[in-house]
Image 1 (tube, rainbow, N blue to C red):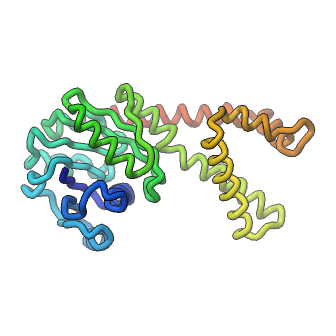
Image 2 (tube, rainbow, N blue to C red; image 1 turned 90 degrees about the vertical axis):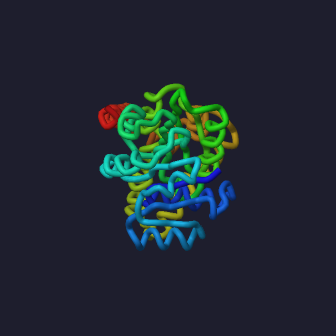
Image 3 (cartoon, rainbow, N blue to C red; image 1 turned 90 degrees about the horizontal axis):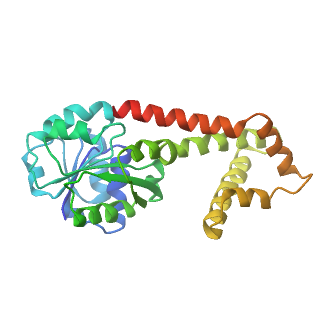
Length: 266
């Protein structure tokens, strides 16, 4: 397999480095296309791959084309790509809010995959979900699984709408957790801890809780009940959250994220 990555921003760069680190691709089988010279040179040195500034006929030498540009740059990027793309090439998009229909119309191509990764891809601990068009063959789906498993975990969606739903859960989810961590850290500082110690307390609390959940493989509700002793401190906080309808606010917020994802994809 040979891969072109179009866009060397946070996500494109993270995927590139994860693939090279996991030895999914040899660096000499990867072409990075990034117009920003500084980004391009830095990633080329880090990954030891080939790079260039513009989309041209060179892309025809590769099997897989991964588009990782910002959504606002999607139209010009696809217009350029459409000039050179071959029918047998597989196009993979990690562009938020760009539907398969939009890509098909712009590229005049039917072998398309839409992927929603998330920001922990930066450390190869991402969660990616993908949906492939009907023209994508079984072996090509296996390529997708291999590619994004190198970036963390990978899941195939049952339909394209599930990509929008996952955007509201795993795509935006790190932001929700960072918000909660922000409030915990601020509270720790208010209670007398230094900023450094507050961050250590919160980071390792979240890390440990996540590992415990992953290790025990039981519902989070069960784990919450296990640490909520009657009359104890945890229950005092949780009761307050319930009185303020924090749980319902979280679910409402996620629903709003889902609706926004659908708006962007329409």
